[in-house]
Length: 277
Ligand SMILES: [Zn+2]
Ligand SMILES: [Zn+2]
Image: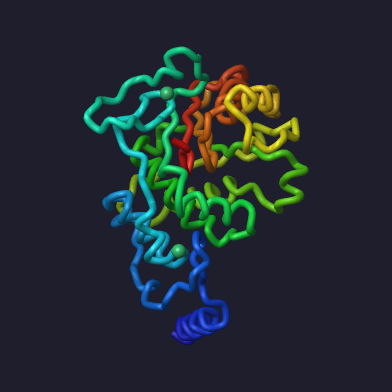
């Protein structure tokens, strides 16, 4: 009881001293916007927009939250690119017909624009690591939309080069997915599974230039041989879920999938927080 009261007082004090600002526009978040309850069972049953509002209400203002656009079908069955015509059925896009992909399919939570773009940039470049858990929850909910947890052997993040980790202080994707085992094992009606997070098997051996501003061909060239499987025994024969923050042209995840495939992975699936369209 005393501890509970102390936690409440502590939280009220920290809210007063460090008011939350919107991770997309910087506006102060009013206290009444912090009252929505979150419950994993409810979240899994909610629409993607509602789940986002529930998960992000402490971190994003009510003007920015409606800017969240989930990626919805029809999309490319392989790379997940959403098609403009809403009446079409899912099918392969032109790029996936002409260019071989080493992953089985890629899916994403939301379109990479507006407040989502600003939020991810704040998370990656402005040290907003407080977003790791809510964004990890959004990724996990998207994972449940496409997979049964037991259908993968391990999840792994697209690795950063050690120099970049040194500069940034963290791999933004590892921070998000490291909450998964706790979420998956939570006492809720959600499918329970012991999700393994593989952090050492795949490494980034080449410190590549930033991909921003490069076209597709330059991106593919930039990524060539950027990754290496350090422990082939940890990927051989396994069904792997490769996670990244943004899918732009897919050249980063494709290069990771290529080396994982070469090392004997049974399947590589891709999941990202956002997708450029
Ligand atoms: Zn805002
Ligand atoms: Zn495609």
